[in-house]
Amino acid sequence: MCPPCFLMQLQQNTRTRAPEGRGGGVAKTAPRARPDMHHSSVFDLTHTLTADFPSYNGTRDLEIDTMKNFAEHGVNVKRWTVREHVGTHIDAPLHFSADGISCDLIPADDLVVPLVVIDIALRAQDKASTAVTPDDIAAFEARHGPIPEGCCVAMHSGWGRHVRTAKYRNADEEGRMHFPGWHVECAHALLERKVTGLGVDTLSIDMGPTETFETHYAWLPAGRWAIEGLANLDQLPATGSTIVLGAPKIAGATGGPTRVFALV
Image (cartoon, helix red, strand yellow):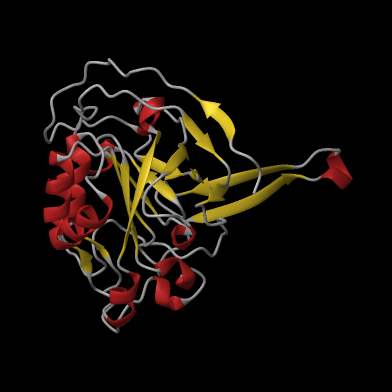
């Protein structure tokens, strides 16, 4: 571990935000002073995206074609055909709202925020279709203190270890998937706490069997973002990290594959 090195100091955020609601504007959070952020370790929370990466729909959501190669052309160029919501990826408010902001309009300083990790991995071993509940939030805060405004709260279910197996989607004979997610009541509770982002190490912030996507519809239209398919959450402390999202800046994007780091 190298000695802590200075990362950056972000000044107090005084931006005026649009009101919350199903319109999905930028989240209305109180102006917050950001402390000096130092780190001694960087953790990559991103799965390597390949053409056979498991997708929510069970389809092949990434195709890679070689357009030029070095032997023939003196340069390597590839073309990607990709669905926005595959691999480790961000959901923008527009994904589940009629007029929410797209990925390119999410303010940069909302993509570098404190990270809180709630661990339900032990429970998820025995019950795939489990959810983070308000009781989990209460237990976390009793041990670690209040969840801070403007942070990202991530669910660690241990599901990242299944990413290259059929267990990641965990579909039954009828095609219904079974993996952990966030209970919609948690989404409402975290909105009250003015949390900025919601994360999971699974395919969706909703539990696998959902047919209504209640958590998506509660969270994204309120102007928040979500990050799905996170890796290596088991290597992080419950508090004290900073998450950094390299979200794609593509006009009108509802989300997209994202490189994600944790600074510890």
